[in-house]
Amino acid sequence: MRLLITGGAGFIGSNFVRYILKKYPDYQVMVLDALTYAGNRDNFEENIWQNPKFSFYHGNICDKEVVDSLMRDTDTVVHFAAETHVDRSILEAGTFIQTDVYGTYVLLEAARKYKVKRFVHISTDEVYGEAKSPTGENRPSLETDPLMPKSPYAASKAGADRLAFSYYTTYQLPVVISRCSNNYGPNQYPEKLIPLFITNALENEPLPVYGSGKNTRDWIHVLDHCAALDILLHSEGQDGEAFNIGGGQEFNILQISKTILKMLEKNESALQFVLDRPGHVMRHAVDTSKIKNVFGWQPKIDFDEGIKQTVDWYIKNESWWQKIKGKSIEYQEFTKKWYEERN
Ligand code: NAD
Ligand code: DAU
Image (cartoon, rainbow, N blue to C red; front, side):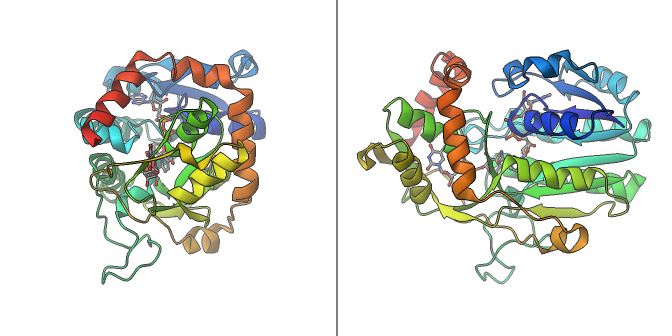
C-alpha cells in the first residue's frame, strides 16, 4: 500500500504513522505536513526518519501542485491535516476555513483525478454540537443526527465532512469518514486540556478551568483511535459512511483536573476558574454501536491506565514540550490574547 498521510507530524497523525510503520512494515508511508505551530519534526523518532519506507514532504494541503504531485504516487489517503484548536478558531476563523474546508477540497479533487482506492477523512464528534437527540433528549450522538457545530472549528470540520461525503455521492470516490471523540496520549500539543494541565501542573502554574468545569467529554486513548482508523483504512464497501469512534469514558473537566493534580501530588488550589469559552459545548459523547457492530472494534485502553501513561510520558519528555510551549513566543502571544479576552 502507498499511503499519503496528511497532517502526519501532528498529535494523532504522528501516532498513526508510528502505528502503521510498526504493524505494516511493507507499506510506503508518505507524510504531507505544513509544520504549523502544531506540527513537529520531533514527533518522529530517529528510527522513523531512517526507515526507507517513510518519506516526509513539507508542504500545504491547499497547494494544488504539491498535492497533485504526491497523489500521483498514492493509492490510499488518510487525511488528518487541519487547524484543530477550538479556542484559536474563536479568535481567528479564517485559517480554519482555508485549511479544513478548502484544503480538504484540494485533496478530494486530486484523489478523484488519480483514482485513489480509499480516502479516510478524519472528521470529529464536534460536528454534532451538543450530544442530544433531535428532540432535545440528552444522549450520545448517532451518525444520523443533524450536524449542529458550535464553533468555527467545528463548523469548518462539518463542511469538510459533508464535502467528503459529496465526493462519494457525486463522483463515487471511496470515502469513509471517522468522527472521533477527545483523544489524549503522547505528543499532544500543550494547548489542549490534558497536556496543558499536566505541563502547567509540572511548572506550578495555574490550571485555567473554563466556566463551571462541569462540561463533559468522552476520552479515548490515541492508540485506540489509531486501531479504529486501521480498520476503516482496510475496509471494503462502507463507501460514503461515517463512523463514530469513542472511548466510552466520560469525565468532566474538574474530574480530569483533579486526577492530574493528584497524580502529580499537587494541591487543588492550582485550579483557577476563568470566564467560559464562548459557544462552549456542555457535552460531547458518541454512540459507537455502528463501528462495533459492523467491524467488531472496541477501545482497549482504560482511562485510569491511559492517563497514568500519558502523565509519565510528559514527565519523561519535558524537553519535547518545553521546546514548543515555554519557549514559543507564538504560544505565549496566543495565550495572552486568549486570557485577555476571557477576563
Ligand atoms: P494537531 O493540531 O496536533 O495536528 C494537525 C497537523 O496538521 C499538524 O501537524 C499541522 O502542521 C498540520 N497542518 C495544519 N494545517 C496544514 C495545512 N494547511 N497543510 C498541511 N498540514 C497542515 O491535530 P490532531 O489533534 O492530531 O488532529 C488531527 C485530526 O484529527 C484533525 O483533522 C482533527 O480535526 C481530528 N480530530 C482530533 C481529535 C482530538 O481530540 N485531537 C478528535 C477527533 C478528530
Ligand atoms: O471532540 C473532539 C475534539 O476534541 C477535536 O475535534 C478537537 O480538535 C480537540 O481540540 C478537542 O476539542 P475540545 O474543545 O473538546 O478540546 P479542548 O482540549 O480544547 O477542551 C476540552 C475541554 O476542556 C473543554 O470543555 C474546554 C475545557 N478547557 C480547555 C482548555 C484548553 C478548560 O476548561 N480549560 C482550558 O484551558
